[in-house]
Image 1 (cartoon, rainbow, N blue to C red):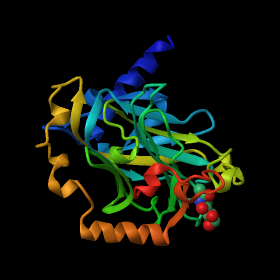
Image 2: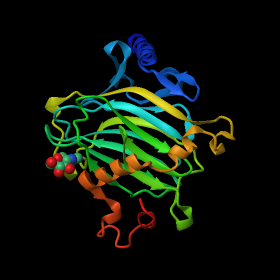
Image 3: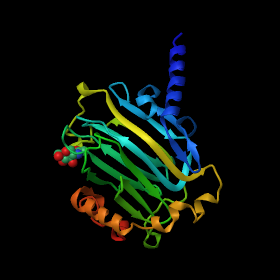
Image 4: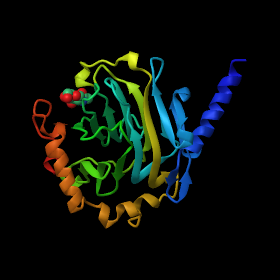
Length: 291
Ligand SMILES: *[C@@H]1O[C@H](CO)[C@@H](O)[C@H](O)[C@H]1NC(C)=O
């Protein structure tokens, strides 16, 4: 008897998800049903606004998560997110790519660390290349990311990896193997998203605890855009220099982007592993090579 409502619920949420995503994956429209799967707590991922958005829910019982069914080798992934509003201290919303290989993990992380009402959200980025991470950088956002949707993008091509907040590059990791900088280029990565509680570290280093009286916490997602070489797929795709994300316009920041990048780093960066001398008495190679 107990299985009927939950099965019905599962089918309903799949249909809702299908309605909710206007996705595109290299040449064909993407759908949640076809391109994504729930990885954690189906019951905590819901449709909203007649299907134009997805709501992720965090409450005392659970957070939730979803992932792409396929992996991609190079490309550009972007997503519109509206983060947990008000008192979001202790919550973390993540959007990342991961090779899912334990020993030689490649991973590109966006993590949105909540804060007390009126205090700025922090965006932490990290890059794992060939099994090594510990490359955290943090910026405080210059707008309230819970008031409206903003676009968060990861561009990954043979020249660099760039993290964007709307049209502002907040991080660049150059492909600089000549200077011994590890760069992910062999392993495809899946696309993941989660909303969970991490009040042991997230806000002011764990000093600010989650206020469960404010639960449930909601984050909203819409307009996934995945452009890349799906794996499995044609093997020649990833090395094709004619893929648009490998084009001249994407090989380095243009002058306007470079100015925005500089502006963010001067005015909004609050942590950079490159300059953390107590952690790295010897500056990591990629920092010298110009991150
Ligand atoms: C939260 O706000 C405090 C105070 O403005 C700030 O120092 C901190 O960087 C913000 N972010 C997090 C995640 O603690």
